[in-house]
Structures are given as structure tokens and as C-alpha cells.
Length: 414
View: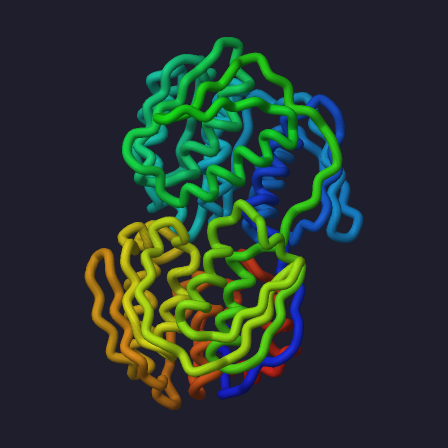
């Protein structure tokens, strides 16, 4: 689908969508309990449906009531096909969990998922009882049962490798130690994982160089509520900064989510930022050039590149962007250049001058929701068209509905 966006000023209030990162983790933890759990405030994006689909194949049943789910674990099936769709989170978290359960699995995926790296994790899992039929690509078939012990994982590739093991190792009979090699990237996501584990009664001891995990633990069922998502809320907050006055509610200002750093970034850029007990209001103002390292907040990179087109500045620490739904660093560089913004790019950095986008530009969505939503924000400053707009369903199905409700102008193109 192609949409045209026209200059507009966004104004009003929006409720932050539920955190996809938390929802994945709550669903997995609930499926490991002995009794039923209720998880409230879930948005059924394509990625969340992918996790639910794999857990259903495992034997878990879900009953939906509005935005709440009752989760009832079943008798684990011992041989399944795990259709992960395009969700890297689904696959990376469940590789270890299903291995701990001794499930024979054939993982399938679409889009960029077969190209995303998982070799560092599968190599370590192979040293602890699992066997894999290939070292790259998909389908990927796994057999065996994970064994407790000493694990050494490269923490500089993906925090999801570590999160998956933190979910899996408490299920094993013996104790384990997970040592981290290198400085963890996206460390805030590990904090989310640990918070969810604590909520389900799982104990993990943090050490200077890793985590000590006692084996034989049991996940405790209960009732849980997913927080609002700072990552997706950032689009509305940036929109307020560049062209409007937007209030986002439903956010925990003390959240473990690393992307709440967006408020600090917008403040440094000169936007008018007001924090409330359940969210924030951002109003446009005279913006100032800034420099942002995104190594610990990688999901913010696309929308920050749009912010920089309004204020000028530099994004660093972006080398891992190539392993997302698309190569986001290259995608945003190409889209900004197509819109007349004379960016400069390296493997790790994007320089964006303060420059109004060119009227009538045609941008690509790269089948990536964050690239599409970022392009929509560029459309607040100049008329332009964007392809692959259906990609927002992957993580934020209601994005365009909210965009128009706040005053955005969207015209479908044939």
C-alpha cells in the first residue's frame, strides 16, 4: 500500500500502545506456569500474534476478552512447527525456552527473519545439549534438551539471546551461570526481562559479569498488566516537537524501558517537554542541534533521524541497525536523501543537517514499521509518498488511525 502525507500540525492526546517487548515476555512466562494467568492491556500486532501462534503449537490456549488474555498452559507437545512470522523476538526468546522443554522444533520465518543472526546463540546451545540442522537461514530444526551449567554468550550482538536464556535456565534441574562476554547492548531490555521474571516468582541473581540462576524453579501464575510502550510513544512525542502539541498518556515514567530516554533527548533538542504522572506533553519550539548515541535505544534510531532533520545533528552507535526488519541505518539515509535532506552515513553513524524535506518526494517503507512511521512524520513537513505502509500492522496496527485523529493528512494512492 502507498500513502501520501501532507504537511500538518498534530495536536491532542493519545494513549500509548501496550509495550510489545513486555507482552512477548508475559506471554512466554504465562505459558510456563502450572495454572492460568490473565494478561491485560495487550495489542494484537503481527509480532505478538507470532508468539501466540508458536505457544499455541506448544499446547497453550488463549481466551481473549477485549485487550486481555487468559493464558492456560497445556501439556507440552514434543514436536512442533514454530511459525515465527517476521518476529525476531519470538524466535530469539523461544530458541532457548523450547530447548529447555526438550521440544523438537522446526522454526520457520518470513521477510528478513531468515537473514537475521542467531549463530552465536545456537553455538552455545549446542554445547549444552541441543542439535541444529544448519548454521544459517531457515527453516531451522532443533532437537535435544538443554542442560544446566556454565554459559558464555556474546552480549554485544543481541540482548534477546540473554533474555531467552534467562527464561529457560530456571526450568532446568541443575543450577547455571550465564556469563556475559562484552558490554551488553540494549541493556534496558534485560531489565524488562528480569522484571517479568520477578513478577512470575523466578529468582535470578545478578553478578558483576553475568547471572546466577538456580535450577528447578516454577513460574507462578497470576494477573499482570502490560505497560505502555515508550518506543512507539516516541513517534507522537517527536511529532509534537517538530510540528505540534501532543500529549501521550498510559506511560510509566519510571519504566525499565530504555526508550523513555526520548524525553531527555527532546529536552536537549530544545522542545517544550512536560512530564506528568502517567505520560508527557511535548510542544514544538525552536530546536537545537544534538548528538545521540543509540546503542542502548536502537529502536529510536529511525524516528530520531526525522527529529534531526528538524534540528540537525548526529546519530552514533548505529552499527546493529542492519539486523532489524531492514537495514534501518541505510533505509533512513536513503529516504532522507530522497527527500532532499543531504545526510552522510558510515557503518555506525548518520549525520543529518537541519533541512526541510523536498515537496513531492517518493520514499520507501522497506516493509519496516519504524521506517514507515518515521516517513509519516517527515510528511508533517512536506508532501511526500511512502510505500509498504501496511508494515505498521507488525507492531502498531492503529498508527494511521491515531495519526489522522491528531490532525495528520493521509491519502491512499492507487
